[in-house]
Image (tube, rainbow, N blue to C red; front, side, top):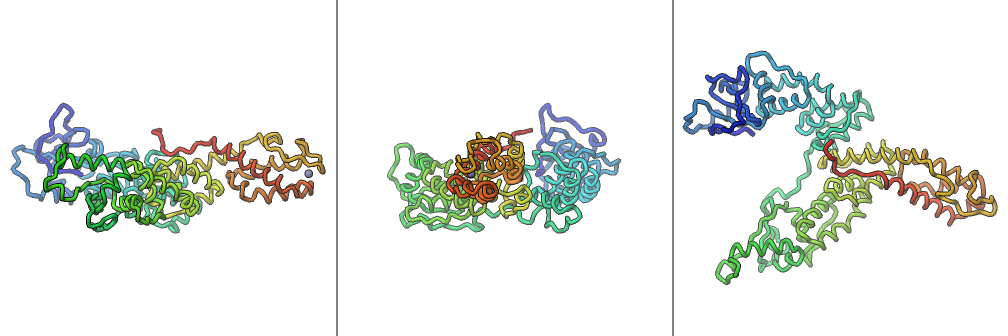
Amino acid sequence: MAQSGTDQPSGPETRTAHHPFDDRNADVILHSSDGVDFYVYRTILILASPFFRSMFSLPQSEISEPCQVVPVTEDSRTIESLLRICYPIKDPVIDDARHALAVFGAANKYEMEVATIFMSKAMSTIVELEPLLIYAVACKNGYEELAGQAARQVVVRGNAYLPEVEEMSAGCYHRLLKLKQIGVGRASEIGPFCGTSHGRNTSHSSVTDSALLGRQDADVVLVASDLTRFHVYKSIISLASPRLQTLIAEAEILRHGPQGSSDHTSLTTLTLQLPVDSKTLELLLALCDPAGTPILDDTALIFRALDEACKYEMHKASWILRQQFQRLMTADTLSFYLWAASYKQEEPAIKAAKLLLSHTMEELAGLYTDDMESVSAGSYYRLLRYHEECCAKISALEDWSPSTIPYPDCSDCGWRGTWDHWSTNYLRTIPERLSRRPSPTTFDGGFGFSEIVQAAKQSCSSCAQNYPGIVSFSKNIGEKIDEHISEVKLILVQSNE
Ligand SMILES: [Zn+2]
């Protein structure tokens, strides 16, 4: 945000912009983030931008310098292009997507209508250069029209991973995949690409006093980041959290001095401000309260609370929260994965990602949950890549020989591990069969069992009736698949590439 200031920036870094922004008769200096001074005329800024009009209409302190200096957060390249659009001079040439986005963003921020219109036109051609980049930035900033244009281009041209993917929501990325599936001709069937909600409300809207753990004689008040106050017993939360115990002790020393004291201040309740939202704090305190009955059905809240529970060393609360994993993962595997990945909880994230392998890629890309609007597209993108890699891994398997997964011996068909047995032939079909659903559960508890019975029936009735044999055969296949899938690494955090 630009701020009005009169302090002349100093230091060797400051340079003066090129002509025509070096005009010493000008009455305002825009000081860019990389230390370049642009000498500009206030009148032009006022005409071009309601933002600057309001800024300059504020009462100014007595200015001794000939020029008012306004520091801005944009770099000099962005400011120069922006000013060239607003000044009655030749327009800038903009042919680089990241630069175009920076100028477009600045034009929007400073409410420069002329620049916004100019940049909207420029973006229409630039969108073909790096459509995914433009899509990501458009979604992040809610530029719906631009997002729609970029989405069509991504579908037509395709695009590799970009760091900007991390900044848009999984919901936005999902709509891009949907457009790919149904085709650009049906783009109108997809809701706003930018999405309608921007994250769920994570805290109480009003400032309240919670009665949780709060009795008349509560001796500590914990204040959440949204100023909700929780009246609690020092003894209970100290037992539950060694970290809170330390914080309380430190606060007491600050208040009384290291010797402690029995003067009148000890009668007032100790107040401790915590950088935790009230909903999360409420859950954590309910988990500490011997009489608390916390509601544990919100996956996002549970991962957030777990994150804080680790910071505050609340081991029992962490344990109880982890006990909810299996139930929540079964209820909504995709949401569970997205939150687990967002909070870098590797083990539950891998479990959920493996469970999702029982879907084909098309089915997985078609799944949608509201939580997708609140998590980064990065985690979602990496889940899809993981699925792809698992499919490729299973398709490429060649070692499904009778020696890897032997069928129990059968006296009727004389099976003793030869290559022409039905079980061997069946094993050979697995890479293709599982190439689209590379999941161990497909066998172990999935359709594997009935498939094997069918395959056996066509060759040997004794084999087909050997149910314990078939059960262990399908279980062994499941384990073998799991072994191969476990070699595929699920990346939780993208390293800079
Ligand atoms: Zn047999």
